[in-house]
Image 1 (cartoon, rainbow, N blue to C red):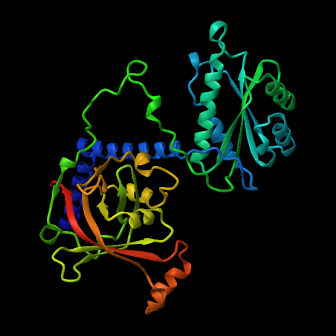
Image 2 (cartoon, helix red, strand yellow):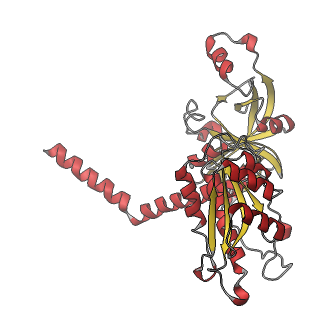
Image 3 (spheres, rainbow, N blue to C red):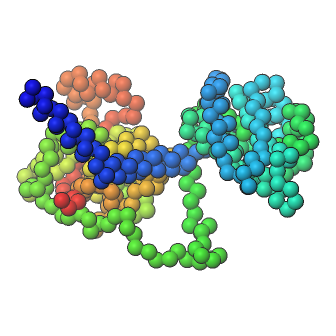
Length: 394
């Protein structure tokens, strides 16, 4: 009975702690940060996809695309849109011929023709707001498609009179329905590389041509880090330091670097050198290897946020600016080595030795079996002496 009562009290205390306002706010903040990263990743990785697999798009996904479209804002909440869902191969082919930029529709499983309904549009000078409303709905379709693993491309129709007439004829549209575009959709045949389209030259502040106001960066600061001696103040089990979700490895120079998640590594001493060493392993096909080969220094970083390492381990720097997607803030050591303010521990190393594994030197089946099924080539190991170590203050 005493044990049961004790357990009940402990359970109540745990529930009270979980429901404490500060803990709930912290959980909300974590959820909010994760949601923000997911949303930004979906936006920044969207591409125009023009080749598709020979498989149909499920009705449930089509329904969700339409729900996303109709969640768009519209002037005075008029919602002056109409959507024609096209899955018939004959009609898809006809659409590809009606619009010279929609040729891919002939091989696609799905198209959604986004139209304006003039019977629902504003009257007078506000009539053309239907274009903005239908465009917002179109962008929602593109983002929803990307989020569901589909590929899509916007092919314009309006305001070309010839295209509008041709598409209207194919779809038998009444006079008050005006086609804005044809969004061609399907499962991507291959992955497209997202483009980083951000250009600060396109931004003005307060007035045209106005410079960005000087404001303090409150997102974090290198002052939050304190130098520490890895020989006396490193309190992590070296056998598990690289385990779990791994660490982040970064190499390069200011403005030109890459980072990747690593799960292999060793800590120790070598060659009687007075400073400890870190060994990291990078496969030949990894983008980060190019930066490891060209630069003298590298950093390894520990993060409390496992989502950062999960993303960094699944997306290549060849395809996206991963730090920008995650909202990370880059800083550089005195040696010009990149690291991120959001890390809770940073160890900078100077490479002393690098070489590839020699398959002929494998002594048992473990490495042989691994590389028999590993697609990214043999690993290069980099031995670096620790030149700087920082961690966030307690």
